[in-house]
Image: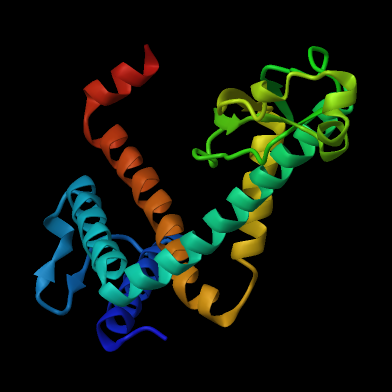
Length: 235
């Protein structure tokens, strides 16, 4: 649950955002008295909307930077990243299996040195993927004799001293389609609908909608207030 500071910041952001949406939806003009004191009738609309945007940004920043909000979002982000890395790692291991069978993976392209045609029945050592998480990267692997071939090495006169080899570097490149699909699967896994997620994300959805309204209203205000803006847009 959010602490008191984050809860108050969340409530204030929701009030401001919903107020902006209500003004736009109900067609309430920016005139009359604000809190019974400030006469908005003498204020240019574009100035009023710039002020509203600043206020919206301020309350959004307070909510986003509240310690408990930061902690909650960090947990969700970590969950998403772990799932994303697991999907990529599984795809790489699957692609390596296909490569050993002289087959091709539709998800990722691998570039590595295949020693199997040089020295009988070889198998790759456990690959290490130090930079998993990006669309392209490198991995380490080595080649060794399979246990069966190592037992027959004397009979077949194999040069066993060459194996296992030193670690070598290979390259992987995920296809753009699969990489985007992996991101989407990780997001669906991490951000399953729940009360906690609703509590965290709903203010951002409402604030984003309010920000769009503010930008549109500001644009119209500038368009009608300044002739040179209309000239620029008409050229």
